[in-house]
Amino acid sequence: MTAPTVLRRRTDDTLAQRLARSAAQRAEGSGLRTTEVAGWLAERARAHHFRVERIALNDLDGWFFAADTGNLHHHTGRFFSVEGLDVRHSNGAIRRWQQPIIRQPEVGILGILAKEIDGVLHFLLQAKMEPGNRNLLQLSPTVQATHSNYTGAHRGAPVKYLEYFTDPRRGSVLTDVLQSEHGSWFYRKSNRNIVLEALGEVRVDDDFCWLTLGQIGELLRHDNVINMDARTVLASCPVTPTEPGALYTDTELRSWFTAERSRHTLAVERVPLAGIEEWKRGDLTLGRDDGRYFRLVAVAVEAGNREVARWSQPLFEPTGTGVSAFLFRHFAGVPHLLVQAKVEAGLLATVELAPTVQCTPANWAHLPEPMRPHLLGVVREAGPERVRYAAVHSEEGGRFLNAENSYLFVEADEAQAPVEPPAGFRWATPGQLNNLAQHGHYLNVQARTLLACLNAGTVCLDPPR
Image (cartoon, rainbow, N blue to C red):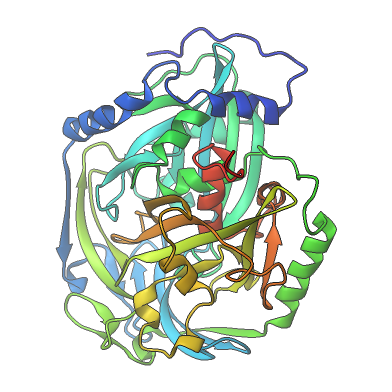
């Protein structure tokens, strides 16, 4: 199948204008209507055989625990390893801890192919199975591949459409930036987030479909449809200019963020997995006796439409559903989001901008109220009239099992979130965050999910008329 007739775009259009036109087309695109996507995904699920089964850690095929460190490795030395991490923090409720961490010292490609069809930008998304997704099949980028995968370490089929992202003659780059992955579970992991506008005709595989940005925005209203990798790529699209009337200039916001990065002292040391405190390895899991945070598990996977049809692998399984929420207010009629400068042990630069609240509440329930995440109560107690957006989205299904966050935008007032917030928090406009997302390692992956919802028009923060 080939893409429909392509019309030459007007040369005076900016990329932001083209993205805005694509975001405005919400009900249908060049192929599927938005209401047809769920049925199409179900049909793609029926077209292939999928199975995920939990297995014992020692039954992992091709993986081994090193005799000297207890670290978990793949026999090829590729893909990733699971090691221990010792963390000492100068601030915060918890000053020292140890944990398992995923170490994957390679940069993957998260690439979305774009094409202007009938005058509107469309994006080629893939119905991709990931073993950690609760519903297995979600819409992912055109190419979602680690370096080990796209260089053939798995000895499987080639990654479809990879040539567009390795041969610059095949397209025009719309955005291209290195972004972090989950800083609590990955050790200094980055991916290349790229949107490439293709030149010439594009043949469309049965497991792929063209959608407008507006269609993607409508699908983001539903739980577990657009996967994390697609969300993070869309967050970097230059959609919103910096709004006049921001409380702080771009320079002031960056200066505050630089100061936040400077004031935190974080000592992070890789240590043997076998010796980390409060974690014990059993037949099926490596976890904590108190059941908090997450555990290491193993699965055997069968997937008829992946580059390799059968494999086994370790996954991190969180022990609760997380909450990632932006509080927002209007100042002089301009919407502002309350961002926090959040420390995460696995981040390359220690601190990135995060949602106002980012935590798994159950992990903090044993602590007294003053030690729990700031403003968590405001988010959890918000009535429906203050919740502008709420949906549950999966995190990286290739490394995490049933990892889900409840994502929200919640309107606040002066009493709940004053114009002068406490240390570590700052008001910023959506346009300012969109500008920062076009540069690497400013916004963390949870903040980028919420920004993608703004970029795609899923949620509007304008005051009610």
